[in-house]
Image (cartoon, rainbow over the protein chains, first blue to last red):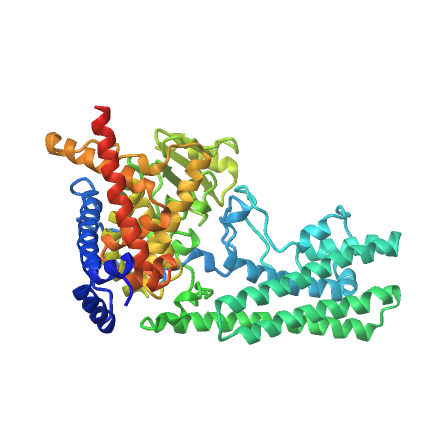
Length: 420
Length: 165
C-alpha cells in the first residue's frame, strides 16, 4: 500500500472509514513511520481547527443556545403552512417587484393557460369576433403583449384584478383585443394579419413546450397527462393556424366548429388537470408521513378554502412581541382599526423590501371586507427605501412601511395618516 | 408535513443560526437567514432535511454576499458583531480571538469554509457531501485542506499582529 493521503487520515480520525478501509489504513500505519508521524500532525491540525471554529460562539443568550420558537400563536394548521407561490389564482394584492421574483413554479401554469387561451383565440377568433362585437382599436403591439405568458412586473394598488387565464372559460381582455386586432388587420390588409399570427403561434408553442418541460422536472406521475394537454394545445394552435392562414376569408364553418371544439376540449382538459392536482395535493397533505413529493417543489394546490393567512400571503402568523423583535421597534398599526392578523410574508413579494428577509405584515379588513396590508421591514445599514413610487411607501425610523390594499389610493392615503 | 416542520425547527434552528453566525459574524443576519431558510422549507418540504436546510442557508449567504459586494459594502466575513456584549473583560479577549478566527476563515475558499462549518455542526461526511454537492470521497480531502489552511492562516495572522505591535 502506498502512503496514505491526508484526506484518508482525516477520514480515519473523523471515524468516516468503513471497517475494511480502517483495517487497511491501520495496518499500513503500523508499518509506515512516515504515515504515522503525518497522522500525528493531522491530529493536531484537526484539533486546532475544531477549537478555532468552536471559538466562534455567538454572544451569550442567543438563539443557538436557546432556540426561539417561530411563533407565539398556536401551532400552525395545515392551511397556515401553505406556500403562497402555489396558489391557484393570483392573489388580489399580489405585487411582484421584478421579473426575477416571478415564481418559476407558477410560470408553467400561466404559460399553459396562455397557450390554451391563445389556441382558442387563434382558432376561434373569427367566431369570437361575431360574439364580442366592435369597439375602439387598441394598438397592434397589444397582440404580442397578450401572448406573453408573464404578468406585468409591477402592479400599483389599484391594478389589483389580474386576469387568470386558465380559470376563466370565457375570453377575457386579451382575447377581445386580439379579436379586434384581427378585425382591423383583415379590413386593411391580409398580410399583417399573417405576420401578427405567426409570433403568436410561436409563443403558444413555446409556452406549451416550456409548460410540458418544466412540469416533467417537478412532478412525475402526471407528466403524461400534462404533456398530452400541452400537445393538444400545441396541435390546436398549429392546426387552427394552418387552417386559418391560407383559408383567410373563405374559412368553412365546420372547420371553425372543429377548432372551437378542440380548443374547448383543451381548456376542459386543463381544468380537469388542475382539479386532479388539487386532489393529489390533498392526498399528499394527508399522508404527512410520506416525504416522497418533497423534491418536487410543491407544485400542488390546496383543496381548502382560503384563509385570511392565504389571502394576505402570510406564511407564518406571529404575535406582537415577535413582530416587534423582527422590526427592532414596536409594530406600526393603523389607529382605530383592529388588525385581523399579524404575520410574516416574503420580502420578495414586497416592492422595496429586502427580498431575503421576511416582512412583517399587519392585515386589516375594513367594514366592507376589503383587505388592507401594512407591511413593515427593518432597514439594514445602507439600505434606503426607494420611496419614489407614490407616497404609500415611507420609512419611520429604521422601519420601512408600505401600505397597500383593496380600497382605492385615496382611502389608503387617509389611512396612512392614522398609522402610528 | 406540519408536525415534521415544527420538529425540524426545534431540531435544527439553533444549529443553523450558529452556523450562519459563524459564517456571517452577524447575529441578526444569521437569524434572518435561518428564518428565511425555514420559510423556504415551508414552501417546499425537503426530503433530506438537514443537508437541505444548510444548503439553502449557505446559498442565501452567498447570494446576500454577492449583492453586498455589488453594492460596495464591506465583505461580510470581516464584519464583527457590532452589538455590545455583557461582561467586558473576558469578552474583549474573546472578541479579539473571534475576529482573528473570522479573518482566517475568510481566507479559505467557499467550499472549504462551508465544509468546516458543517463539520462543526456535527455533520458526517455523507451529509457534508449532500449539502455541498460533493462526492463523499472528496470530503476528507476538502476537510484536510480546510483545516490546514484555517490553522495556518490563523497562526500567520497572529504572527503578523505580533510583528506589527
